Structure formats: C-alpha cells, structure tokens
Length: 478
View 1 (cartoon, rainbow, N blue to C red):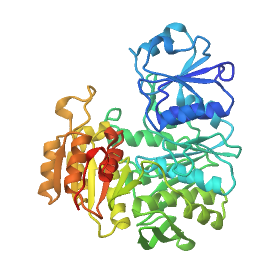
View 2: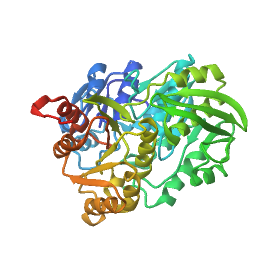
View 3: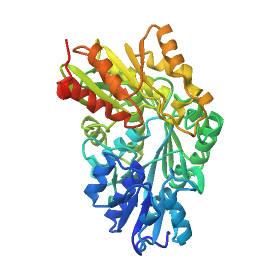
View 4: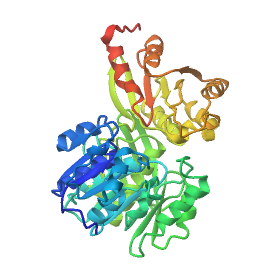
C-alpha cells in the first residue's frame, strides 16, 4: 500500500493527460484532495478537471507543488530536467507513478479486467465497462478515452470488477516497464500484437516480449481472451499459464461473428460460440475491427455470467467513444468525422469501416503524422497502402520533435508520390488552415471527411465545420 495516500493532498505532474486526469477523478471520488500541473491543459481534459474542481497550474514551475502535498504522482511524459520534477526530488516528498497508485488504491482488492493489445484497447475497454454497467454490476473503470454517453472516463464503482486499459507504453522516467505490468490482471484481453511505439520498442520482437510478460501475470483461476487473427497474439496465448478463450471475425476461434447486414445505423451479426449460435446482435458497429472489439467483450461477459439478454441490450445501446470515428457534425451535406487513428492498421480499419457505413459516398482521409510511430519512416509504405483506401487524401506536415532525427522522419513527399502512384487523389498541405481552405474549394455535398490524428490537429474538425457553415467569411459552392 502507498503509505501517503489518504494522509494529505496528492499532486499530479502531467495532469492534462487522459489517464492522469481520470486518476484525479478516481482519487476525488475516494475523498482525497488533489492538485495538479502540466505544461498546458486542453479540452476535453481541461473541462473535466474544471468540473472536478481540481486546482490545475500551468506551465510547469518549481513553485507549483503545494507545500502540504504528501505524495506526488509523476506522469510518464516527464523526464529529468523538468523544473517541477526537480523541485519534487529536492524536497524529498514521496513520489510514485500513476500505474502504481491505480494498482494499490483501486485494483488490489477488485477483479481487474485488463484490456491490452496494439489496437482497439480504448473502445473495447469502454464497451466492457458499459456492458457491466448496463447489467447493474457497478464496475470501476479507468480508460484512455471519453465515452460519448457520459463524458466520464473513470469510476470507482461498488462492484467486484474494475476495467482498465492496459497500456504497453512505459510507466515513468524511473520505471521504464509497461504500465500494464502493474495492473494485476485476473481477466486479460490481448486483441492483437503489432509494432508500435517506436520510441521505446526496438522492433516487433521487443513488443511481443512485453505482451508475453503481461500474459504471464494472469493467475490459473483467471482467463486470457485472445484475438486469433493476430498471429503474434495467438502465439503468445499458446504458452499462457491460465485458461484461454479466443475470438475471430474470420478464422478458427471459440467466439466468431458472421455479418448478416450493414447500413448507416450499424450492423446485424450472428455470434457463435464453438460453432453454436450464441447471440443475434444488432448494434452501432461497422467493420472487422469493431466486431473484434465486440467479440472480446462478449467472451469476458460470458466468463462473468452475464446473460444473453444483458449483453444484447448493452450492445444495442452503446454510443461509442469520443474521437473514435466520432461524427462531430454535418454542414451543407458534408459529414465531418474525428478519429484517433495513428497507426497504419488503425487507419486501414477506420477507412474500411467507413466504406460500410457510408456506402457510395466520397471519402476524404485527412491525416496528420503525429505519433512517434507515424512520424518515423518505419511505416512509410504501409501508410500509403492504408490511406489509399480513401477516394481523396490530404497529408499534413509531420509533427516535428527533437526526439526524432530528420533522417528517420516520414517523408511527406514520398507518401504523396506513393499515394498518387496507387491512383489516389493525394495532396500535401502545411497545417489546419490550409487544409480547411483546400476542402472548402474541393468538397461537395454528400462527401465524408475523416480527420485522423492522435493530437488536436489545430482544431481542424471544428474549423472545418465553421467554414462549411459560412462563419468567419468562408463560403462554400456546391
């Protein structure tokens, strides 16, 4: 147990991040006084912290740390040399990581359900929390995304289960292991394994090793739910020290889905368990990636003895996650979608799902290379293949960072050339405002514009909607 928790105020360094702001909410629910700081804090986290009445100080400064603080939680984005962190170290106040607080304060006496994998964690995690909530199980949860229905990414909960997103990114500057190694999984979901986070993993073998260590934490009375369509995930499951159940949209698995129909409102699909009909589901899900998320949650729900009716009711009423294929508005017949896709596989799955949801409509893919992985040239060719699924593509300039040498950066010029060679209508623009101008000139009624970035992208979706509506002097000709 962390001795300082409950003895006085807790100060969070890096409180503007989704996980850290959500941890602040959990601590507040426990009656613990919380303060925090960050370099900058943006919506939606700034809105959440204001709602929670958490005093938040920006930018980082040595004097931000309250003298009465009994514990400091250090976010994983901070490193030595940060003025506020250095003040904490000089003061001798106890400090720890977000993952360690989560483990000792919220997970130790619960049934942790940890959702892991390279893709789909956030949506699967919130879907799992929604299934349990809808069934009256009162789960706790902490997720790296915001549900559209409630706007809350956390809850302490009074039930046995606690659902947490198992992030493979490192824990803190003093703990370079993955966060999920702290989360005591009784039930673990491993959806897929690919190379990502090129800033901390050398190669896909290094990534696979981390997930093997995670799976080795599941006790013999627990459960591993594995996505069989990922060869690496399936390989890891072969040596799991616990019971294993598998899922796949296509291929051999314990849980499978057969799509019967898809339209603008969602899909109807038949779920089978070991070849026998288990559920007939209708819900707001499009594409193979979404169905895999659903199958993973159904497998866990079955383990937790939720009934078929409880599962079907929850799935049909799920409202999704902000910034995961979120329709943010429609103006003049143009639909604008905000999506977090920041890996070639995620881009491909997003566009594939869009084809099902918006059949016969022109798809625009607007992409900002912002994550470390997509800013590097490791996926140069794969990005062109994925973005090429759209009818028209606009690529923004690479988000610059001193952490990545110029010679290792993605080449925007090469990406555009590869897209055009594949037959795509591809263009390069240097940021949000020029992209809005391009779209205002070229888009037409009925088009669907999908904005993809793991950052703010200069507020592009909102700027585009305002321009389409004619605000700020913009005009649209159809």
